[in-house]
Length: 269
Image (cartoon, rainbow, N blue to C red; front, side, top):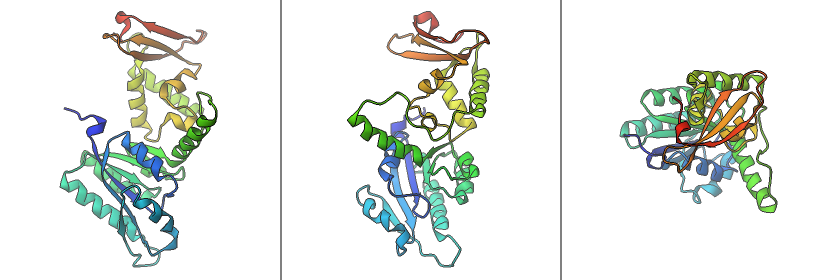
């Protein structure tokens, strides 16, 4: 039986040399959406002034610092310490997944190895993170989006904002093509696909996909903004919630968002 997100245990391993400390609260809140952090460790050479900012937030968030001296100039001993600990935790059998917080491509092979062992792997890093590391993760979250989320919450307290937030990436032709092809991959004979399945498939193709990257808080909001996609909301068989189905709109067909339908439309045939 699959575990619920709340039951999943994650080891959170943070590379202090390659991510900023200013948004640690947002990072941990984001991780909490996917499971419970049972290990929270941060690695760095704490004798260096470049990581001094982290020291003020470690106690507040119960993160265990791991001291790793730089034995040789030009070599990153922190990476090795993280990788060794990750493998120790893996073989302990005490977690369901890992969250690697870094913008360093050196952790690409580690992410691949953990996934080969059946672990869920979430990456968190800056937009500068190399594609190789992003692709090795099951899901990758940009720190810039978390920063924007905190800023928008502060703004919302002062005034009500628009449905769409600021974006860090343009919804370009390449992404529109990915969405369209994914709908086609999932569509039934009538062309309809379940929105939840679409989100899962796009993540498999693009681990860094997140509606917030394009200025939308939810996937449904992003999809409804695309003129070439038709959206239909259907009532579930139990009648207690709405299910969103989508299909590619035929050329010349006017855009519409259908209201919830009854039981007979609860799912694709």
